[in-house]
Length: 76
Image 1 (cartoon, one colour):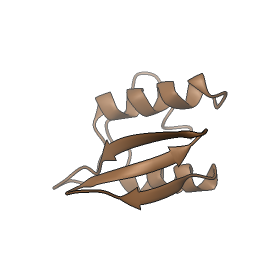
Image 2 (tube, one colour):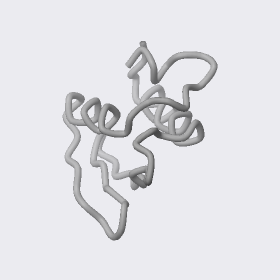
Image 3 (cartoon, rainbow, N blue to C red):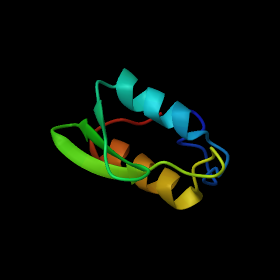
């Protein structure tokens, strides 16, 4: 959580840590085509791409996830 809300946006957060956070918040995760996953949380479904070949999430995805969490009352 701390890394996700850090400023400036981090580009070194491991995707598996973000998925673990989603699950801890009560999300249902479903496998999609290719490297995509569906995340059902806050009564919404969002589709994300698992990063590859490296496990780190890019800054754009981190900013998008942070914004989605904030819009739904989750902040650090």
